[in-house]
Amino acid sequence: MKLLAKKKPLKILFWFGPFLLAAGLTSGFVSQNWGPIQLTLIILGTLIIVLWLIWQNKQNNWLGQRSTQASTNALIATLAVLAILGLINFLGTRYDTRVDLTETKLFTLAPQSRELVRNLQVPAKILLFDVNQDPVDRDLLENYRRQSSKFSFEYIDPQARPGLARKFGVKDYGEVYLEFGDKRQLVQVVGPQQRLSEVKLTNSLQQISSISSAKVYLLQGHGEHELSGKGEGVISQAVKALNDKGYTTSALNLVEKSSIPQDANVVVVAGPKRSLFENEVKALQDYLNRGGNVMLMIDPDTDPKLESLLAQWGVKLDNRLAVDVSASVGLGPAAPLVTQYGKHPITKDFGNGISFYPLARPIDTNPVPGIQATPLLLTKAYPNSWAESDQQSENLKFNPESDRKGPLTLGVALTRKLSAKSEATSNSTPTPTPTATPQTQASPTQRATPTTAATPASPTQRATPTTAATPASPTQRAKPIAAATPQTSASPTQRAKPTTPATPASPTPTTTPTATATPASPTPSSTSGESRMVVLGNSDFIINGLFDKQLNGDVFLNSVTWLSQQDQQPLSISPKEVINRRINLTGVQALLLELSSLVILPLIGLVVAAIFWWTRR
Image 1 (tube, helix red, strand yellow):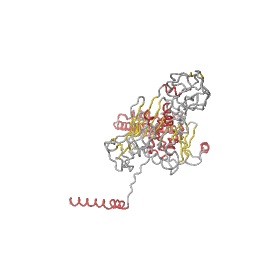
Image 2 (image 1 turned 45 degrees about the vertical axis):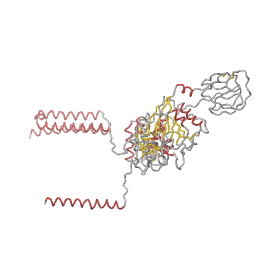
Image 3 (image 1 turned 90 degrees about the horizontal axis):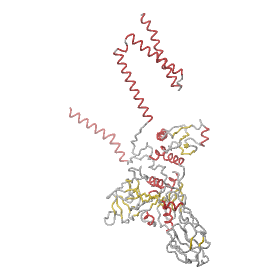
Image 4 (image 1 turned 90 degrees about the vertical axis):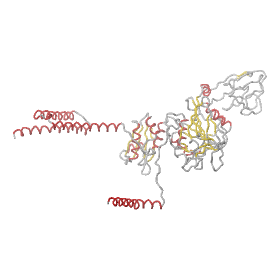
């Protein structure tokens, strides 16, 4: 009894240790302040527990007992398991890995979105002015935030923070704003029927983060697809998609303008049905020669008279029709499906995705020094696809004498480095130079000089004769008729175009300074030292109704992005949508399914069970 009475105060003293330790830890975690009071409680409690264990060991050799050793091993194993689980959870939180097993990767950001967020140089923040946090929207924003620490989001109650709501001009619940530095932009309005869209969020982020807006001109006047409206063959969806990505689009009529505008980054020729004039083709050639970028989409049974331009790049259009008999999606053999793509920035993320091209023509390329050509779109091999020469036949059948076996190339991307001479010529400004009448050879940079005042020349004009002359064609060379010694050879860049009659020149050779200088050729905004061109054998794949199907729109948008030479903008496929896999059953099929599940299958089970019972009986 006396021994128990002596040990009782010591037991009471022991319980102060866990109490003080728990009080110190609780106070520190709750207040998030590990001050002197919290540390004193923790140290004092730990010290009491240690002294108690030492005293118990001296009294009855507690540490040497088998039960103590077993308990200690169990405690250490438990603590080790908890430490391992804690470490795994820490690593999982900090370095999370998600596996998306859905067919179209519904829960994975598109490569374009991932690359754009990872390359953010300025913090971007999404503000959702709503009281309800939809789990689908939050999961999408979490996917963005995992890509970069510079991306964040926040849900805000407009009534709880009215000052911030007025700052952004919030008018209703569900408005989503993007804040990028000192810029703010409305992304969309979400609600029960409209969830947050990755397409709109990525496009808004790309627009607000882009430093400059590239200018895209779409050629008109030769039966090309209309840019607006609701008729057949309109490409307003493609134009809107370009605007959503931050491009500025405008129509271009080269009959009204003698040259490509100076601010043009890309010129798109979408399905011309009639021939271009010679001066229009020349304008496109000059634009490419000074570093421009052109996208040509030319359909079968059309001749836009671009052979001379394409020949300079080693491209030849095949007049036959690309046929694909392997397609089983109701598009017909004249709309080849493409699942094979060339290794190029335009198609690098397409994988085995599908794009289709109704009524397309094959494209051939020939090696040209300085031109690098990469096939983009490849059809299947023969006998699945071939080039059909008899386009009027209702029964498409391969003819070895006139047809061509697949695989066929329906699109090609080309690059040409600019020479130092062409860059210097395109960027130089002409200066007045004296010109003597007798000449033997004109310099490529010289201009023919009139001896009297003449009408200022247009940007496409060169030499102007000094006396009245018969009107010359645009392809004729300059040849003054009053010179003492006629020119034997004119510069390749000179063209003759008569102006108003002037006073006949004196037979004595004179030297007269030029009256006006020809304006310098406009230079594109790109200064990368190369020109680019994409040629596709079809243009109908971007019309309204087909543009947003499969990868059709991505082929067009990625081509324009690559042509604009803004390589900092990512190229990839658009986010995927849910595939409709519902089965449409007739009344008879639904009744049969119901009977089979409720009557036939249970009856089969009963019969099998009865057979087993009878055989074992």
